[in-house]
Length: 510
Ligand code: GLU
Image (cartoon, rainbow, N blue to C red):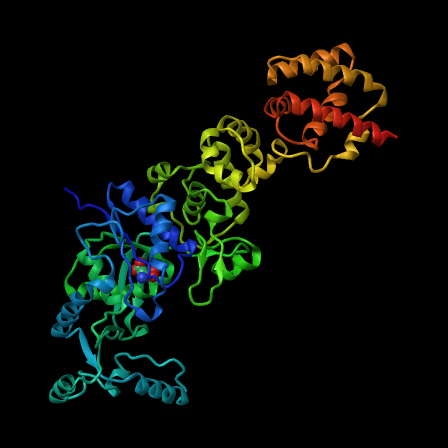
């Protein structure tokens, strides 16, 4: 039996999840589901200095809203927990110890102040970005160069220490990335990264590798920014003697003009959200609006994100989550950055609003209607949603597009009313009011028949009648099919409006 596919999304709770993070989670989810595997949420909170309250809850809420719930993880249970790294703290020291024993790691006793001073000196000597590496480590305070007694004395005395990885010199680290192919790094470009600190907290690298191993992760799918960390991870797997997962580093999401990585600032500047949900920064109080609150449906958000870096190789653009699972493959994820397009994002939303059933739309907009003060039966709301959904990009536009079902017309297109009206038709239109009054039931098809019969009797064309009707009923020439609108408005409102429209038309002529 082949190994069960397991992917993980491993965010650090340092703030709200950027849409790039959601895309990573989505691809991890799609890949796992496609292969009947498991998708895991692991919270990487070892850097307590960057911890932001509420961020973890935000991540969980986001995954739920998007419909990409993990099989295991913080808030979701599972057999490989705890899934929050701060709760796994005790486990990591043992692994750091293993590396020390193998000779692949060492103790370093340099204090942050000493390192600052050293860096300063190096800069003054013309070395702008000094690294703790195979060369420089010879001059620094670590167990590779201090005597054994001195090391023991320092450890016993409780001197602060860190455990660093002993980066080999002049080696090539190669691995296969499922998106980028063979990737190779020279160890001389790398430094001796800290793995564990004296308070027992691991750094990202150690915790990430140990947990991926212990949680039996088979595929590490993450953003491109983690590519430079991967050679160290590969070396760590080797040092531990563990099988490596497959790696796939996702392309960047680029600004709309394609120049550089998409940032929150671009969203602020160009007026689009970069976060999935609303977020209020607990430190600064700054509020950012999310896709959800901006009126996006999760299906549209997910569909748009799926296409930021992946394509199905066909013309199809609308994919449900299940269809994405079916169609997704890492081979079709590109290497180059994917440009974000807010217009396209809105287009996706429009498509999803259009494709919703009327009953679903009523569910989704119920609150929006009542917040606006618009009351109606579900049946009537369904009819209204059905008539307006074609024109809505956002859900919250629906009550506004439908205002004339609830309120008097705010503004009449007087220019067109004047242009299309002829005083000599006045008499005829009065008879139409009478025809409507006699009409029973007042239904779209009956209204249409009545109008057609009226046009025939009075030898009038569509262009002479429909604009008058439209403007009288809704104020404008555009809008949903007028006979259906009239049915929903109801007979008495239509009679009143037509009366008013005709009066206005006449006034405008005078
Ligand atoms: N904690 C890292 C992050 O915040 C995880 C990177 C990875 O997936 O390895 O994105």
